[in-house]
Length: 116
Image (cartoon, rainbow, N blue to C red):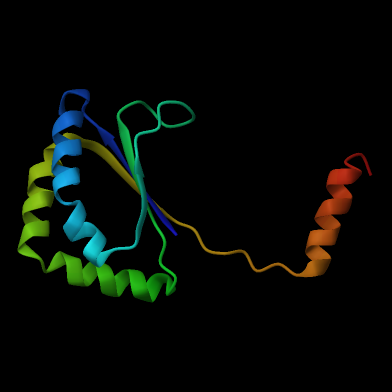
């Protein structure tokens, strides 16, 4: 799973949203976009767009798909149109934790008995 966050100039949020909406068919034809949103509460600042992608094939699938998309002329135009909208970009990769049944039992014991 990849979470990409874009902190936008307040005056450019509408332009970014318009361009991102227009590019949606291209984006979703290449990337497994699971969610695009603007959270209004929580730990993110206002005017932060985030995109959540789920790559079942892991990092190798991500690299392949992003390389394919980067070759598209329409994608290059999109990036050129929205680059000025962004003040900051962050990207985080999250991988599934491999835990065993004993680890889960230990966690449950701790939650049920936090003082022990």
